[in-house]
Amino acid sequence: MDLQKIRELIDLVSQSSLSELELTQGDESIRLLKDTRLSRESQSLDPQVTDAVGERAIPRDPQGGVQPAVSSSERVCTSPMVGTFYRASSPGEAPFVQVGDHVVAGQPICVVEAMKMLNEVEADVSGRIKSILVENGSFVEYGQALFIVE
Image (cartoon, rainbow, N blue to C red; front, side):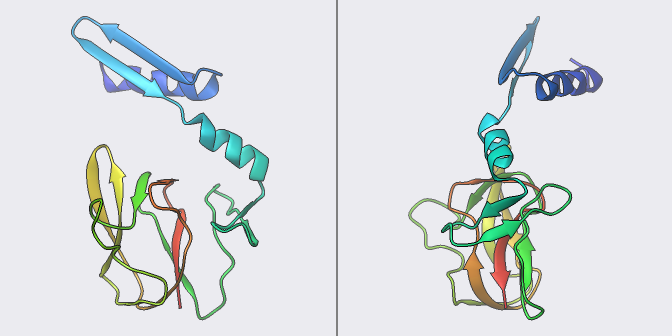
Protein backbone atom coordinates (compact mmCIF):
# COMPACT_ATOMS: atom_id res chain seq x y z
CA MET A 1 0.00 0.00 0.00
CA ASP A 2 1.57 3.28 -1.03
CA LEU A 3 1.75 6.41 1.07
CA GLN A 4 -0.66 8.35 -1.18
CA LYS A 5 -3.34 5.67 -0.77
CA ILE A 6 -2.88 5.76 3.03
CA ARG A 7 -3.25 9.56 3.03
CA GLU A 8 -6.46 9.26 1.02
CA LEU A 9 -7.83 6.72 3.49
CA ILE A 10 -6.98 9.00 6.42
CA ASP A 11 -8.78 11.90 4.71
CA LEU A 12 -11.82 9.72 4.03
CA VAL A 13 -12.05 8.56 7.65
CA SER A 14 -11.50 12.05 9.08
CA GLN A 15 -14.25 13.53 6.88
CA SER A 16 -16.75 10.73 7.49
CA SER A 17 -18.81 9.59 10.45
CA LEU A 18 -16.75 6.37 10.60
CA SER A 19 -14.76 5.84 13.75
CA GLU A 20 -12.76 2.88 12.45
CA LEU A 21 -11.63 1.45 9.11
CA GLU A 22 -9.70 -1.75 8.51
CA LEU A 23 -8.49 -2.70 5.03
CA THR A 24 -6.54 -5.76 3.88
CA GLN A 25 -4.96 -6.16 0.46
CA GLY A 26 -2.99 -9.36 0.04
CA ASP A 27 -0.50 -9.57 2.88
CA GLU A 28 -0.77 -5.85 3.74
CA SER A 29 -3.33 -4.40 6.11
CA ILE A 30 -4.07 -1.06 7.69
CA ARG A 31 -6.38 -0.10 10.55
CA LEU A 32 -7.37 3.52 11.10
CA LEU A 33 -9.10 4.66 14.29
CA LYS A 34 -10.61 8.10 14.80
CA ASP A 35 -10.54 9.42 18.36
CA THR A 36 -14.17 10.49 18.55
CA ARG A 37 -13.77 11.31 22.22
CA LEU A 38 -11.56 14.25 21.27
CA SER A 39 -14.04 15.49 18.70
CA ARG A 40 -16.93 15.43 21.17
CA GLU A 41 -14.87 17.13 23.87
CA SER A 42 -13.67 19.92 21.63
CA GLN A 43 -17.17 20.50 20.25
CA SER A 44 -18.73 20.72 23.68
CA LEU A 45 -15.96 22.84 25.19
CA ASP A 46 -14.98 25.11 22.33
CA PRO A 47 -14.04 27.97 22.36
CA GLN A 48 -13.01 27.56 25.97
CA VAL A 49 -12.14 24.50 28.03
CA THR A 50 -11.63 24.07 31.73
CA ASP A 51 -8.27 23.23 33.21
CA ALA A 52 -7.51 19.84 34.78
CA VAL A 53 -9.34 20.69 38.00
CA GLY A 54 -12.20 22.51 36.25
CA GLU A 55 -11.65 25.77 38.07
CA ARG A 56 -11.19 28.25 35.25
CA ALA A 57 -11.64 28.51 31.53
CA ILE A 58 -8.61 28.23 29.28
CA PRO A 59 -8.93 29.85 25.84
CA ARG A 60 -8.13 27.83 22.72
CA ASP A 61 -5.50 29.12 20.37
CA PRO A 62 -6.46 29.69 16.70
CA GLN A 63 -4.87 26.38 15.67
CA GLY A 64 -7.10 24.41 18.06
CA GLY A 65 -4.62 23.65 20.84
CA VAL A 66 -5.43 24.52 24.42
CA GLN A 67 -3.35 27.47 25.60
CA PRO A 68 -3.73 28.78 29.14
CA ALA A 69 -3.61 32.46 29.98
CA VAL A 70 -0.27 33.15 31.63
CA SER A 71 1.31 36.22 33.18
CA SER A 72 4.43 37.86 31.79
CA SER A 73 6.58 35.97 34.33
CA GLU A 74 5.21 32.57 33.30
CA ARG A 75 6.02 30.32 30.36
CA VAL A 76 4.17 27.33 28.92
CA CYS A 77 5.88 24.03 28.07
CA THR A 78 4.02 22.35 25.22
CA SER A 79 3.87 18.90 23.70
CA PRO A 80 6.22 18.48 20.74
CA MET A 81 4.03 15.73 19.27
CA VAL A 82 0.72 13.90 19.35
CA GLY A 83 0.61 10.99 21.78
CA THR A 84 -0.05 9.88 25.33
CA PHE A 85 1.32 12.01 28.18
CA TYR A 86 3.08 10.29 31.10
CA ARG A 87 4.60 12.04 34.10
CA ALA A 88 7.07 9.18 34.75
CA SER A 89 9.26 7.06 32.50
CA SER A 90 7.47 3.86 33.55
CA PRO A 91 4.68 2.73 35.89
CA GLY A 92 5.78 2.75 39.52
CA GLU A 93 8.57 5.26 38.88
CA ALA A 94 8.56 8.71 40.47
CA PRO A 95 7.27 11.51 38.23
CA PHE A 96 9.92 13.58 36.46
CA VAL A 97 8.60 16.75 38.13
CA GLN A 98 6.01 17.85 40.69
CA VAL A 99 4.33 21.21 41.20
CA GLY A 100 6.86 23.41 43.00
CA ASP A 101 9.95 21.68 41.58
CA HIS A 102 12.66 23.83 40.02
CA VAL A 103 13.61 22.83 36.47
CA VAL A 104 16.36 23.95 34.14
CA ALA A 105 16.09 24.20 30.36
CA GLY A 106 16.90 20.82 28.82
CA GLN A 107 15.79 18.81 31.86
CA PRO A 108 13.34 15.95 31.12
CA ILE A 109 9.90 16.83 32.52
CA CYS A 110 7.67 14.07 31.08
CA VAL A 111 7.35 11.56 28.25
CA VAL A 112 4.93 11.42 25.34
CA GLU A 113 4.32 7.99 23.90
CA ALA A 114 3.83 8.00 20.15
CA MET A 115 3.75 4.88 17.99
CA LYS A 116 4.88 2.72 20.93
CA MET A 117 7.97 4.89 21.47
CA LEU A 118 8.54 6.87 24.66
CA ASN A 119 9.84 10.33 23.81
CA GLU A 120 11.31 12.42 26.61
CA VAL A 121 10.05 15.99 26.64
CA GLU A 122 12.53 18.52 27.97
CA ALA A 123 11.81 21.86 29.61
CA ASP A 124 12.50 24.67 27.19
CA VAL A 125 12.77 27.23 30.00
CA SER A 126 14.16 27.31 33.53
CA GLY A 127 12.00 28.04 36.54
CA ARG A 128 9.54 26.55 39.03
CA ILE A 129 6.69 24.25 37.93
CA LYS A 130 3.57 26.25 38.76
CA SER A 131 1.01 23.79 37.41
CA ILE A 132 0.64 20.56 35.47
CA LEU A 133 -2.19 20.95 32.97
CA VAL A 134 -2.58 17.35 31.78
CA GLU A 135 -3.65 14.20 33.60
CA ASN A 136 -1.25 11.25 33.52
CA GLY A 137 -2.16 8.88 30.69
CA SER A 138 -4.12 11.52 28.74
CA PHE A 139 -3.97 11.97 24.99
CA VAL A 140 -2.20 15.19 23.98
CA GLU A 141 -1.94 17.05 20.71
CA TYR A 142 0.98 18.80 19.08
CA GLY A 143 1.46 22.19 20.75
CA GLN A 144 -0.89 21.45 23.66
CA ALA A 145 0.12 23.12 26.93
CA LEU A 146 1.51 20.62 29.45
CA PHE A 147 3.13 22.73 32.20
CA ILE A 148 3.23 26.32 33.36
CA VAL A 149 6.68 27.37 34.56
CA GLU A 150 7.33 30.62 36.46
